[in-house]
Length: 250
Image (cartoon, rainbow, N blue to C red; front, side):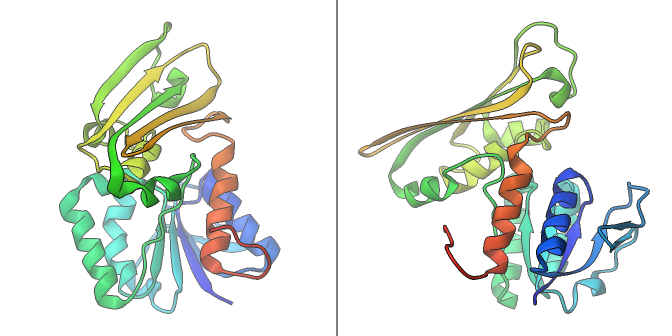
């Protein structure tokens, strides 16, 4: 059984911890989260202080906290184990991204990129070499964006790199699409605040040599930055990383 740990004990982290403990698919060593009062989640110890030596002996670290937490601990974790990050906006920093890629290569560990709130990330990556245009539009309730708009408002339109800096917790989908496709500077982002919606909707358009794809993904918001689908996809991604038997979609 693989030994894993979590950085972040919010909704997504809790869902994954409950999933692996219920299915006995991994041994969860600890959950790092200095901002929650719980001392344990599903019987797993929650720690508020993290020493990088705690990564030793782990097979996988799952990050579902913030881009700052990922940037702080990813390189240290990769010296001992693989990581699965959900804060994709951290990768907008090219120098940091190159640093963690080199760390993974040097230590023979992996960086597993989950598809999160969208479908078809693997397909985007497969067609990367022939893509010429990639755009993504996200529509969320103002509360999810930390705003108080009373009318539908375009809050950002431009390169994904800047969007990831302005809304690091809200555009992980944009960052994931950029990583899979044309990169942060050539991917076009549009973020819309709409007080009349209670869903998180992402419209992705890809054009390339012989292809023209449009993906629309929408899930109900549960009050935070993520929709109802994300915890489900997170558990599925974790299952695939941990391995197992039976049908496995890859």
